[in-house]
Length: 317
Image (cartoon, rainbow, N blue to C red; front, side, top):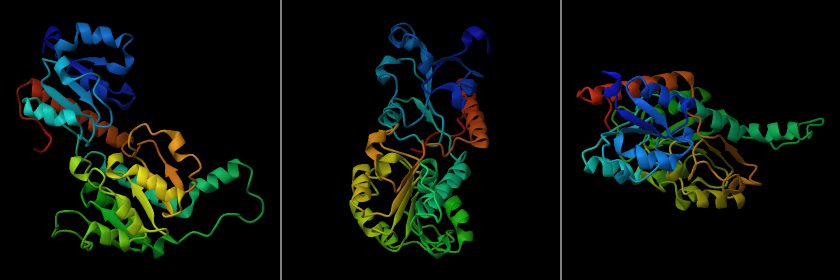
């Protein structure tokens, strides 16, 4: 492809995660966060944008109507739940994402959050930094991981990897999802409420889309109960966050570990004074192997699209 024929791609995320670098192997790239004058870009060049590279947790820079030449919406990562996805599909604009790339790294973070939340690692860190460690550890005893019952919401790639990592702890594992899986190695609960009621730790790894918005609601949290822990590595909107915050503040939940929030970035004031929350800034997939895989997949989808070939990972319809 001649330099003058290279399509223009607008990348909405900072290039620290490598999306712009990957797109630049095929396209001329403009990185939205780096623009000195975004309004001028929209006025002068938006009509020439043929691909947008983004992540599902960020809004697009402008309405789709500002990009009349758009041919491809490419998500850097597995998530693709946003209103523009359906609008693009309805208009015949191709949409791709990055499934099966970061599930192992996300599962690692999920288990890390389980350990940190249940065993009080973040509270211990704060105690030491505040100079409060004198003599015997002045923190309450925590449950033993081997004695707990673990519930997995969503037994896809991430959920399966989480269960595999939790199994060596020795606790019972069960799961729930809307579809029965004959290949599942762990028992499926009769319902989400039943899974929460019979779990000490509920790990949310369900697909993040409109069908799972608010799935973990006040009723599920009540079923999990004041001795229960919640960990979410799905999408922030899968959990009713105001209900979660209320449960934590009122002692109706023992603790939480979150790598995702609704919205993102989360307002730190929302979590002020909640010592039972372990929070991480959506870094589950931010590992070297996952990032390299996502870059390679993005490049290949862009190459295939502009070469007129079948896309490698179109979003399911």
